[in-house]
Length: 267
Length: 282
Image 1 (tube, each protein chain N blue to C red):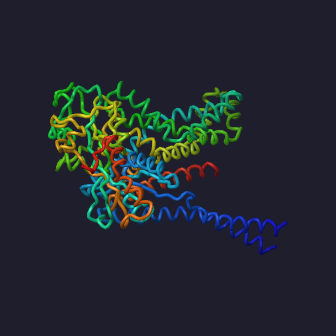
Image 2: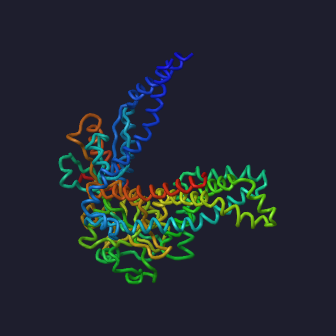
Image 3: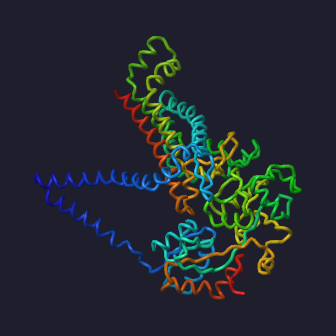
Protein backbone atom coordinates (compact mmCIF):
# COMPACT_ATOMS: atom_id res chain seq x y z
CA UNK A 1 0.00 0.00 0.00
CA UNK A 2 2.63 2.42 1.08
CA UNK A 3 5.03 1.59 -1.71
CA UNK A 4 2.20 1.99 -4.19
CA UNK A 5 1.31 5.44 -2.92
CA UNK A 6 4.89 6.63 -3.03
CA UNK A 7 5.16 5.17 -6.54
CA UNK A 8 2.10 7.21 -7.42
CA UNK A 9 3.61 10.32 -5.90
CA UNK A 10 6.85 9.90 -7.83
CA UNK A 11 5.06 9.31 -11.09
CA UNK A 12 2.98 12.42 -10.42
CA UNK A 13 6.11 14.47 -9.89
CA UNK A 14 7.69 13.07 -13.05
CA UNK A 15 4.48 13.79 -14.93
CA UNK A 16 4.54 17.39 -13.72
CA UNK A 17 8.15 17.73 -14.78
CA UNK A 18 7.66 16.25 -18.22
CA UNK A 19 4.41 18.03 -18.91
CA UNK A 20 6.36 21.27 -19.15
CA UNK A 21 8.29 19.90 -22.10
CA UNK A 22 5.08 19.56 -24.07
CA UNK A 23 4.23 23.22 -23.73
CA UNK A 24 5.45 24.22 -27.15
CA UNK A 25 2.68 25.31 -29.47
CA UNK A 26 1.20 22.63 -31.64
CA UNK A 27 0.65 24.87 -34.64
CA UNK A 28 3.70 26.50 -36.13
CA UNK A 29 3.29 30.23 -35.93
CA UNK A 30 4.71 33.61 -35.10
CA UNK A 31 3.84 36.10 -32.42
CA UNK A 32 3.36 39.80 -33.03
CA UNK A 33 3.13 42.10 -30.03
CA UNK A 34 3.13 45.80 -29.32
CA UNK A 35 1.26 49.04 -29.92
CA UNK A 36 -2.46 48.97 -29.39
CA UNK A 37 -2.77 51.47 -32.24
CA UNK A 38 -1.27 49.01 -34.73
CA UNK A 39 -2.90 45.93 -33.21
CA UNK A 40 -6.30 46.03 -34.98
CA UNK A 41 -4.59 46.47 -38.36
CA UNK A 42 -2.10 43.69 -37.65
CA UNK A 43 -5.00 41.42 -36.71
CA UNK A 44 -6.71 42.19 -39.97
CA UNK A 45 -3.54 41.50 -41.94
CA UNK A 46 -2.89 38.32 -39.98
CA UNK A 47 -6.38 37.02 -40.78
CA UNK A 48 -5.87 37.74 -44.45
CA UNK A 49 -2.43 36.12 -44.39
CA UNK A 50 -3.80 33.01 -42.70
CA UNK A 51 -6.43 32.65 -45.42
CA UNK A 52 -3.57 32.50 -47.95
CA UNK A 53 -1.41 30.28 -45.76
CA UNK A 54 -3.75 27.93 -43.90
CA UNK A 55 -0.85 26.11 -42.24
CA UNK A 56 0.56 29.16 -40.50
CA UNK A 57 -0.75 30.84 -37.45
CA UNK A 58 -0.10 34.40 -36.37
CA UNK A 59 -0.72 35.45 -32.81
CA UNK A 60 -1.34 39.18 -32.43
CA UNK A 61 -1.09 40.71 -28.94
CA UNK A 62 -1.31 44.26 -27.66
CA UNK A 63 0.69 45.64 -24.76
CA UNK A 64 2.06 48.88 -26.12
CA UNK A 65 4.94 49.99 -28.32
CA UNK A 66 7.63 49.70 -25.67
CA UNK A 67 6.40 46.31 -24.50
CA UNK A 68 6.41 45.12 -28.10
CA UNK A 69 9.95 46.35 -28.70
CA UNK A 70 11.06 44.74 -25.44
CA UNK A 71 9.36 41.48 -26.46
CA UNK A 72 11.27 41.45 -29.75
CA UNK A 73 14.54 42.12 -28.00
CA UNK A 74 14.01 39.19 -25.62
CA UNK A 75 12.71 37.02 -28.49
CA UNK A 76 9.34 36.66 -26.77
CA UNK A 77 7.77 37.92 -29.99
CA UNK A 78 8.93 37.59 -33.58
CA UNK A 79 7.66 40.99 -34.65
CA UNK A 80 7.08 44.07 -32.53
CA UNK A 81 4.56 46.73 -33.46
CA UNK A 82 5.43 50.32 -32.71
CA UNK A 83 3.43 53.47 -33.29
CA UNK A 84 6.43 55.71 -32.68
CA UNK A 85 9.92 55.99 -34.11
CA UNK A 86 12.61 54.03 -32.29
CA UNK A 87 14.55 55.85 -29.59
CA UNK A 88 18.35 56.02 -29.93
CA UNK A 89 18.76 53.09 -27.47
CA UNK A 90 16.48 50.97 -29.63
CA UNK A 91 18.30 51.63 -32.88
CA UNK A 92 20.02 48.23 -32.79
CA UNK A 93 16.71 46.67 -33.82
CA UNK A 94 15.55 46.50 -37.40
CA UNK A 95 12.44 48.56 -38.13
CA UNK A 96 10.24 48.68 -41.23
CA UNK A 97 7.56 51.31 -41.78
CA UNK A 98 4.44 49.40 -42.84
CA UNK A 99 2.08 52.36 -43.08
CA UNK A 100 1.46 55.82 -41.73
CA UNK A 101 -1.35 56.91 -39.53
CA UNK A 102 -3.01 60.25 -39.05
CA UNK A 103 -4.13 61.47 -35.64
CA UNK A 104 -7.62 62.92 -35.54
CA UNK A 105 -8.83 65.41 -32.97
CA UNK A 106 -12.23 64.15 -31.88
CA UNK A 107 -15.23 65.64 -30.07
CA UNK A 108 -18.77 64.50 -29.30
CA UNK A 109 -21.01 64.54 -32.44
CA UNK A 110 -23.34 67.08 -30.78
CA UNK A 111 -20.51 69.55 -30.29
CA UNK A 112 -21.15 72.43 -32.75
CA UNK A 113 -17.41 73.08 -33.24
CA UNK A 114 -16.18 71.90 -36.65
CA UNK A 115 -12.76 73.41 -36.92
CA UNK A 116 -9.92 74.37 -34.58
CA UNK A 117 -6.56 75.82 -35.45
CA UNK A 118 -3.43 74.01 -34.35
CA UNK A 119 -2.74 76.82 -31.88
CA UNK A 120 -6.25 76.58 -30.42
CA UNK A 121 -5.83 72.82 -29.97
CA UNK A 122 -2.49 73.40 -28.26
CA UNK A 123 -3.99 75.99 -25.91
CA UNK A 124 -6.94 73.74 -25.12
CA UNK A 125 -4.70 70.81 -24.27
CA UNK A 126 -2.30 72.84 -22.16
CA UNK A 127 -5.21 74.19 -20.15
CA UNK A 128 -5.10 77.85 -21.26
CA UNK A 129 -8.50 77.62 -22.95
CA UNK A 130 -10.90 76.02 -20.49
CA UNK A 131 -14.32 76.77 -21.95
CA UNK A 132 -15.88 75.90 -25.30
CA UNK A 133 -17.19 79.48 -25.58
CA UNK A 134 -13.61 80.71 -26.05
CA UNK A 135 -13.43 78.88 -29.37
CA UNK A 136 -16.94 79.74 -30.53
CA UNK A 137 -18.93 76.99 -28.85
CA UNK A 138 -21.50 76.87 -26.05
CA UNK A 139 -20.46 78.05 -22.58
CA UNK A 140 -19.42 74.70 -21.12
CA UNK A 141 -16.17 73.52 -19.56
CA UNK A 142 -13.82 71.59 -21.81
CA UNK A 143 -13.05 68.05 -20.64
CA UNK A 144 -9.63 66.96 -21.92
CA UNK A 145 -8.95 63.31 -22.62
CA UNK A 146 -5.40 62.20 -23.32
CA UNK A 147 -3.33 59.02 -23.56
CA UNK A 148 -1.03 57.82 -20.78
CA UNK A 149 2.64 58.78 -20.51
CA UNK A 150 4.81 56.69 -22.80
CA UNK A 151 2.08 55.98 -25.34
CA UNK A 152 3.19 56.32 -28.96
CA UNK A 153 0.05 58.26 -29.83
CA UNK A 154 0.67 60.67 -26.97
CA UNK A 155 4.30 61.16 -27.97
CA UNK A 156 3.26 61.84 -31.55
CA UNK A 157 0.58 64.30 -30.36
CA UNK A 158 3.04 66.00 -28.05
CA UNK A 159 5.57 66.44 -30.84
CA UNK A 160 3.20 67.48 -33.61
CA UNK A 161 0.63 69.55 -31.72
CA UNK A 162 1.93 70.58 -28.30
CA UNK A 163 5.57 71.22 -29.28
CA UNK A 164 7.09 72.59 -26.06
CA UNK A 165 3.86 73.02 -24.13
CA UNK A 166 2.88 70.39 -21.59
CA UNK A 167 -0.40 68.49 -21.76
CA UNK A 168 -2.51 69.72 -18.85
CA UNK A 169 -2.22 67.51 -15.77
CA UNK A 170 -5.95 67.82 -15.17
CA UNK A 171 -6.72 65.85 -18.33
CA UNK A 172 -8.41 62.52 -18.01
CA UNK A 173 -6.02 59.74 -19.00
CA UNK A 174 -7.14 56.63 -20.88
CA UNK A 175 -4.92 53.77 -21.90
CA UNK A 176 -6.15 53.00 -25.41
CA UNK A 177 -7.61 54.63 -28.50
CA UNK A 178 -10.85 52.76 -27.87
CA UNK A 179 -11.12 54.01 -24.30
CA UNK A 180 -10.64 57.61 -25.45
CA UNK A 181 -13.29 57.15 -28.12
CA UNK A 182 -15.64 55.69 -25.50
CA UNK A 183 -15.16 58.63 -23.13
CA UNK A 184 -15.49 61.27 -25.86
CA UNK A 185 -18.54 59.58 -27.39
CA UNK A 186 -20.36 59.71 -24.06
CA UNK A 187 -19.37 63.20 -22.90
CA UNK A 188 -20.65 66.21 -24.91
CA UNK A 189 -17.90 68.42 -23.41
CA UNK A 190 -14.94 66.15 -24.12
CA UNK A 191 -12.12 66.48 -26.63
CA UNK A 192 -9.50 63.83 -27.34
CA UNK A 193 -7.20 62.44 -30.03
CA UNK A 194 -7.11 58.99 -31.63
CA UNK A 195 -5.92 57.25 -34.79
CA UNK A 196 -7.90 58.47 -37.77
CA UNK A 197 -8.57 54.84 -38.77
CA UNK A 198 -10.49 54.30 -35.55
CA UNK A 199 -12.82 57.29 -35.87
CA UNK A 200 -16.41 56.07 -36.19
CA UNK A 201 -19.87 57.61 -36.23
CA UNK A 202 -19.96 57.97 -32.44
CA UNK A 203 -17.36 60.74 -32.49
CA UNK A 204 -16.60 63.65 -34.77
CA UNK A 205 -13.14 64.34 -36.22
CA UNK A 206 -12.42 68.08 -36.33
CA UNK A 207 -10.84 69.98 -39.17
CA UNK A 208 -7.44 71.24 -38.12
CA UNK A 209 -6.80 74.81 -39.31
CA UNK A 210 -9.53 74.29 -41.88
CA UNK A 211 -8.14 71.03 -43.24
CA UNK A 212 -10.37 67.97 -43.21
CA UNK A 213 -8.53 64.83 -42.02
CA UNK A 214 -9.06 62.65 -45.08
CA UNK A 215 -6.84 60.55 -47.30
CA UNK A 216 -6.52 63.15 -50.05
CA UNK A 217 -5.39 65.88 -47.68
CA UNK A 218 -2.96 63.53 -45.97
CA UNK A 219 -1.44 62.30 -49.24
CA UNK A 220 -0.95 65.86 -50.42
CA UNK A 221 0.72 66.67 -47.13
CA UNK A 222 -1.88 69.24 -46.15
CA UNK A 223 -3.06 67.40 -43.03
CA UNK A 224 0.09 67.29 -40.96
CA UNK A 225 -0.71 65.16 -37.90
CA UNK A 226 0.81 61.95 -39.31
CA UNK A 227 3.12 59.35 -37.69
CA UNK A 228 4.73 56.03 -38.79
CA UNK A 229 3.58 52.52 -37.92
CA UNK A 230 6.57 50.21 -37.58
CA UNK A 231 7.23 46.50 -37.56
CA UNK A 232 10.34 45.85 -35.45
CA UNK A 233 12.61 42.82 -35.78
CA UNK A 234 15.55 41.52 -33.78
CA UNK A 235 18.04 41.23 -36.64
CA UNK A 236 16.87 40.85 -40.21
CA UNK A 237 13.49 39.13 -40.58
CA UNK A 238 13.66 35.36 -41.06
CA UNK A 239 11.27 32.57 -42.05
CA UNK A 240 7.61 33.07 -41.37
CA UNK A 241 8.14 36.60 -40.04
CA UNK A 242 9.86 37.60 -43.25
CA UNK A 243 7.05 36.04 -45.31
CA UNK A 244 4.48 37.97 -43.30
CA UNK A 245 6.40 41.22 -43.71
CA UNK A 246 6.54 40.62 -47.45
CA UNK A 247 2.78 40.10 -47.45
CA UNK A 248 2.20 43.27 -45.42
CA UNK A 249 4.19 45.31 -47.90
CA UNK A 250 2.40 43.73 -50.89
CA UNK A 251 -0.09 45.73 -52.89
CA UNK A 252 -3.01 43.62 -51.68
CA UNK A 253 -2.26 44.18 -47.99
CA UNK A 254 -1.52 47.85 -48.49
CA UNK A 255 -4.87 48.30 -50.23
CA UNK A 256 -6.48 46.64 -47.25
CA UNK A 257 -4.77 49.10 -44.91
CA UNK A 258 -5.80 52.01 -47.10
CA UNK A 259 -9.41 50.87 -46.87
CA UNK A 260 -9.10 50.97 -43.08
CA UNK A 261 -8.03 54.60 -43.14
CA UNK A 262 -4.24 54.25 -42.98
CA UNK A 263 -1.86 55.93 -45.34
CA UNK A 264 0.04 53.36 -47.34
CA UNK A 265 3.76 53.56 -47.96
CA UNK A 266 3.35 52.87 -51.68
CA UNK A 267 2.90 56.02 -53.72
CA UNK B 1 8.63 2.93 6.05
CA UNK B 2 10.19 5.58 8.19
CA UNK B 3 12.29 6.85 5.30
CA UNK B 4 9.38 6.96 2.91
CA UNK B 5 7.32 8.93 5.39
CA UNK B 6 10.17 11.34 5.78
CA UNK B 7 10.60 11.77 2.03
CA UNK B 8 6.93 12.49 1.55
CA UNK B 9 7.04 14.92 4.44
CA UNK B 10 10.00 16.71 2.90
CA UNK B 11 8.35 16.90 -0.51
CA UNK B 12 5.23 18.45 0.98
CA UNK B 13 7.37 20.87 2.92
CA UNK B 14 9.19 21.86 -0.26
CA UNK B 15 5.90 22.44 -2.05
CA UNK B 16 4.61 24.52 0.85
CA UNK B 17 7.81 26.54 0.95
CA UNK B 18 7.72 27.15 -2.79
CA UNK B 19 4.65 29.36 -2.40
CA UNK B 20 6.52 31.47 0.13
CA UNK B 21 9.55 31.45 -2.16
CA UNK B 22 7.44 32.82 -4.99
CA UNK B 23 6.21 35.63 -2.73
CA UNK B 24 9.79 36.36 -1.73
CA UNK B 25 10.86 36.39 -5.38
CA UNK B 26 8.10 38.81 -6.32
CA UNK B 27 9.01 41.08 -3.41
CA UNK B 28 12.68 40.84 -4.35
CA UNK B 29 12.05 41.87 -7.98
CA UNK B 30 9.76 44.75 -7.04
CA UNK B 31 12.37 46.08 -4.63
CA UNK B 32 15.29 45.39 -6.93
CA UNK B 33 13.60 47.38 -9.71
CA UNK B 34 11.99 50.07 -7.57
CA UNK B 35 14.55 50.95 -4.92
CA UNK B 36 17.23 52.34 -7.30
CA UNK B 37 14.83 54.99 -8.57
CA UNK B 38 13.67 55.96 -5.06
CA UNK B 39 17.36 56.20 -4.16
CA UNK B 40 18.07 58.30 -7.21
CA UNK B 41 15.40 60.94 -6.74
CA UNK B 42 15.10 60.68 -2.95
CA UNK B 43 12.34 59.09 -0.87
CA UNK B 44 11.01 62.47 0.17
CA UNK B 45 10.63 63.92 -3.30
CA UNK B 46 9.18 60.63 -4.53
CA UNK B 47 6.48 60.42 -1.87
CA UNK B 48 5.88 64.13 -1.34
CA UNK B 49 6.33 65.34 -4.91
CA UNK B 50 3.02 66.12 -6.58
CA UNK B 51 4.20 66.30 -10.18
CA UNK B 52 4.15 63.07 -12.19
CA UNK B 53 5.53 63.80 -15.68
CA UNK B 54 7.81 60.87 -16.56
CA UNK B 55 8.72 62.36 -19.95
CA UNK B 56 10.33 65.27 -18.08
CA UNK B 57 11.77 63.13 -15.34
CA UNK B 58 9.38 64.26 -12.58
CA UNK B 59 8.29 61.33 -10.47
CA UNK B 60 6.17 62.46 -7.52
CA UNK B 61 3.37 60.21 -6.36
CA UNK B 62 1.76 62.32 -3.64
CA UNK B 63 -1.35 62.98 -5.72
CA UNK B 64 -1.77 59.23 -6.21
CA UNK B 65 -1.31 58.43 -2.53
CA UNK B 66 -3.91 61.09 -1.76
CA UNK B 67 -6.11 59.76 -4.57
CA UNK B 68 -5.85 56.20 -3.24
CA UNK B 69 -6.95 57.33 0.20
CA UNK B 70 -9.81 59.50 -1.07
CA UNK B 71 -11.22 56.65 -3.10
CA UNK B 72 -10.75 54.17 -0.28
CA UNK B 73 -12.30 56.54 2.26
CA UNK B 74 -15.30 57.05 -0.01
CA UNK B 75 -15.67 53.31 -0.45
CA UNK B 76 -15.59 52.78 3.32
CA UNK B 77 -18.17 55.53 3.80
CA UNK B 78 -20.55 53.43 1.74
CA UNK B 79 -19.24 49.97 2.60
CA UNK B 80 -19.09 50.15 6.42
CA UNK B 81 -22.72 51.10 7.19
CA UNK B 82 -24.11 48.83 4.49
CA UNK B 83 -21.82 45.94 5.37
CA UNK B 84 -22.28 46.18 9.12
CA UNK B 85 -26.06 46.51 8.81
CA UNK B 86 -26.11 43.50 6.54
CA UNK B 87 -23.94 41.45 8.94
CA UNK B 88 -26.14 42.31 11.92
CA UNK B 89 -29.27 41.49 9.96
CA UNK B 90 -27.83 38.15 8.80
CA UNK B 91 -26.81 37.31 12.34
CA UNK B 92 -29.83 38.42 14.32
CA UNK B 93 -32.95 38.84 12.26
CA UNK B 94 -32.79 36.97 9.03
CA UNK B 95 -35.42 34.24 8.60
CA UNK B 96 -33.63 30.94 7.88
CA UNK B 97 -35.05 30.62 4.37
CA UNK B 98 -33.94 34.14 3.42
CA UNK B 99 -30.47 33.42 4.82
CA UNK B 100 -30.13 30.48 2.44
CA UNK B 101 -30.62 32.87 -0.47
CA UNK B 102 -28.83 35.91 0.95
CA UNK B 103 -25.46 34.42 1.96
CA UNK B 104 -24.63 32.85 -1.42
CA UNK B 105 -25.78 36.05 -3.12
CA UNK B 106 -23.36 38.10 -1.06
CA UNK B 107 -20.59 35.61 -1.79
CA UNK B 108 -21.46 35.99 -5.45
CA UNK B 109 -20.70 39.71 -5.17
CA UNK B 110 -17.12 38.71 -4.43
CA UNK B 111 -17.01 36.36 -7.40
CA UNK B 112 -17.95 38.97 -10.01
CA UNK B 113 -14.78 39.96 -11.89
CA UNK B 114 -13.75 43.53 -11.19
CA UNK B 115 -13.80 44.41 -14.88
CA UNK B 116 -17.56 43.80 -14.82
CA UNK B 117 -17.94 46.23 -11.92
CA UNK B 118 -15.84 48.71 -13.85
CA UNK B 119 -17.85 48.31 -17.01
CA UNK B 120 -21.12 48.72 -15.14
CA UNK B 121 -19.78 51.82 -13.40
CA UNK B 122 -18.58 53.30 -16.69
CA UNK B 123 -21.81 52.70 -18.56
CA UNK B 124 -24.37 53.34 -15.79
CA UNK B 125 -22.88 55.33 -12.93
CA UNK B 126 -20.53 57.70 -14.75
CA UNK B 127 -23.20 59.24 -17.04
CA UNK B 128 -25.51 59.66 -14.01
CA UNK B 129 -22.83 61.54 -12.07
CA UNK B 130 -21.98 63.65 -15.13
CA UNK B 131 -25.59 64.56 -15.85
CA UNK B 132 -26.77 65.29 -12.32
CA UNK B 133 -23.66 66.49 -10.50
CA UNK B 134 -21.45 67.89 -13.26
CA UNK B 135 -17.78 67.37 -13.98
CA UNK B 136 -16.47 64.63 -16.23
CA UNK B 137 -18.36 61.86 -14.42
CA UNK B 138 -15.17 59.80 -14.32
CA UNK B 139 -14.61 60.74 -10.69
CA UNK B 140 -13.76 59.74 -7.15
CA UNK B 141 -17.48 59.60 -6.39
CA UNK B 142 -18.21 57.04 -9.11
CA UNK B 143 -15.11 55.04 -8.19
CA UNK B 144 -15.92 55.05 -4.47
CA UNK B 145 -19.49 53.93 -5.09
CA UNK B 146 -18.37 50.95 -7.15
CA UNK B 147 -15.58 50.08 -4.71
CA UNK B 148 -18.04 50.32 -1.81
CA UNK B 149 -20.00 47.47 -3.35
CA UNK B 150 -16.88 45.49 -4.14
CA UNK B 151 -15.71 45.45 -0.51
CA UNK B 152 -19.14 44.50 0.87
CA UNK B 153 -18.59 40.72 0.82
CA UNK B 154 -15.35 41.07 2.81
CA UNK B 155 -16.93 43.29 5.45
CA UNK B 156 -20.15 41.30 5.70
CA UNK B 157 -18.69 37.81 5.95
CA UNK B 158 -15.91 38.61 8.44
CA UNK B 159 -18.16 40.81 10.62
CA UNK B 160 -20.85 38.15 10.62
CA UNK B 161 -18.32 35.48 11.63
CA UNK B 162 -17.06 37.57 14.51
CA UNK B 163 -20.61 38.30 15.70
CA UNK B 164 -21.43 34.60 15.57
CA UNK B 165 -18.25 33.69 17.44
CA UNK B 166 -19.42 35.56 20.56
CA UNK B 167 -20.43 33.36 23.52
CA UNK B 168 -24.26 33.00 23.60
CA UNK B 169 -24.17 34.08 27.24
CA UNK B 170 -23.52 37.70 26.17
CA UNK B 171 -26.81 37.93 24.38
CA UNK B 172 -28.71 35.93 26.99
CA UNK B 173 -27.26 38.03 29.79
CA UNK B 174 -28.13 41.33 28.14
CA UNK B 175 -31.66 40.22 27.37
CA UNK B 176 -32.07 38.90 30.94
CA UNK B 177 -31.07 42.31 32.26
CA UNK B 178 -34.01 43.77 30.38
CA UNK B 179 -32.26 45.25 27.34
CA UNK B 180 -34.25 45.31 24.12
CA UNK B 181 -33.00 43.31 21.15
CA UNK B 182 -31.57 46.40 19.49
CA UNK B 183 -29.90 47.60 22.70
CA UNK B 184 -28.36 44.15 23.07
CA UNK B 185 -26.96 44.29 19.53
CA UNK B 186 -25.70 47.85 19.63
CA UNK B 187 -24.47 48.05 23.23
CA UNK B 188 -23.27 44.49 23.82
CA UNK B 189 -22.76 42.37 20.72
CA UNK B 190 -21.20 44.91 18.35
CA UNK B 191 -18.74 46.28 20.96
CA UNK B 192 -17.80 42.72 21.94
CA UNK B 193 -17.13 41.79 18.33
CA UNK B 194 -15.40 45.10 17.69
CA UNK B 195 -11.95 43.76 16.93
CA UNK B 196 -13.30 41.35 14.32
CA UNK B 197 -15.41 44.07 12.76
CA UNK B 198 -12.44 46.44 12.62
CA UNK B 199 -10.35 43.68 11.06
CA UNK B 200 -13.03 43.19 8.40
CA UNK B 201 -12.99 46.90 7.65
CA UNK B 202 -9.21 46.93 7.35
CA UNK B 203 -9.27 43.93 5.03
CA UNK B 204 -11.93 45.70 2.98
CA UNK B 205 -9.66 48.73 2.90
CA UNK B 206 -6.82 46.56 1.63
CA UNK B 207 -9.04 45.27 -1.13
CA UNK B 208 -10.10 48.83 -1.99
CA UNK B 209 -6.54 50.12 -2.18
CA UNK B 210 -5.48 47.16 -4.31
CA UNK B 211 -8.32 47.33 -6.82
CA UNK B 212 -7.04 48.24 -10.27
CA UNK B 213 -9.07 47.27 -13.31
CA UNK B 214 -12.39 48.78 -12.28
CA UNK B 215 -10.65 51.94 -11.11
CA UNK B 216 -8.76 52.41 -14.40
CA UNK B 217 -12.11 52.40 -16.14
CA UNK B 218 -13.95 54.70 -13.74
CA UNK B 219 -11.54 57.16 -12.12
CA UNK B 220 -10.40 59.01 -15.24
CA UNK B 221 -6.74 58.66 -14.17
CA UNK B 222 -5.70 62.30 -14.22
CA UNK B 223 -2.54 63.02 -12.23
CA UNK B 224 -3.73 66.18 -10.52
CA UNK B 225 -4.23 66.51 -6.77
CA UNK B 226 -7.96 65.91 -6.23
CA UNK B 227 -9.91 68.69 -4.57
CA UNK B 228 -13.47 67.36 -4.61
CA UNK B 229 -15.33 64.07 -4.90
CA UNK B 230 -16.28 65.04 -8.47
CA UNK B 231 -12.65 65.27 -9.58
CA UNK B 232 -10.91 62.62 -11.55
CA UNK B 233 -7.95 61.02 -9.80
CA UNK B 234 -5.38 58.28 -10.09
CA UNK B 235 -4.57 55.68 -7.45
CA UNK B 236 -1.24 53.94 -6.90
CA UNK B 237 -2.44 50.74 -8.52
CA UNK B 238 -3.99 52.39 -11.56
CA UNK B 239 -0.79 54.35 -12.08
CA UNK B 240 1.02 51.06 -12.58
CA UNK B 241 -1.79 49.51 -14.57
CA UNK B 242 -2.26 52.35 -17.00
CA UNK B 243 1.36 53.18 -17.75
CA UNK B 244 3.14 49.82 -17.73
CA UNK B 245 2.43 49.14 -21.39
CA UNK B 246 4.72 51.81 -22.72
CA UNK B 247 7.06 52.46 -19.82
CA UNK B 248 10.79 51.86 -20.17
CA UNK B 249 13.95 52.80 -18.30
CA UNK B 250 13.46 55.17 -15.36
CA UNK B 251 9.74 55.36 -16.04
CA UNK B 252 9.35 51.63 -15.57
CA UNK B 253 11.46 51.70 -12.43
CA UNK B 254 9.23 54.48 -11.12
CA UNK B 255 6.22 52.21 -11.61
CA UNK B 256 7.98 49.48 -9.63
CA UNK B 257 8.79 52.09 -6.99
CA UNK B 258 5.07 52.91 -6.87
CA UNK B 259 4.62 49.19 -6.25
CA UNK B 260 7.11 49.35 -3.36
CA UNK B 261 5.07 52.07 -1.66
CA UNK B 262 1.88 50.12 -2.29
CA UNK B 263 3.56 47.02 -0.87
CA UNK B 264 4.26 48.85 2.38
CA UNK B 265 0.75 50.28 2.65
CA UNK B 266 -0.82 46.85 2.13
CA UNK B 267 1.64 45.23 4.56
CA UNK B 268 0.74 47.75 7.25
CA UNK B 269 -2.98 47.25 6.69
CA UNK B 270 -2.75 43.47 6.71
CA UNK B 271 -0.61 43.27 9.81
CA UNK B 272 -3.06 45.61 11.53
CA UNK B 273 -5.91 43.32 10.55
CA UNK B 274 -4.04 40.22 11.75
CA UNK B 275 -3.10 41.78 15.10
CA UNK B 276 -6.67 42.91 15.67
CA UNK B 277 -8.25 39.57 14.83
CA UNK B 278 -5.70 37.73 17.03
CA UNK B 279 -6.70 39.91 19.94
CA UNK B 280 -10.23 38.65 19.55
CA UNK B 281 -9.14 35.02 19.95
CA UNK B 282 -7.34 35.66 23.19
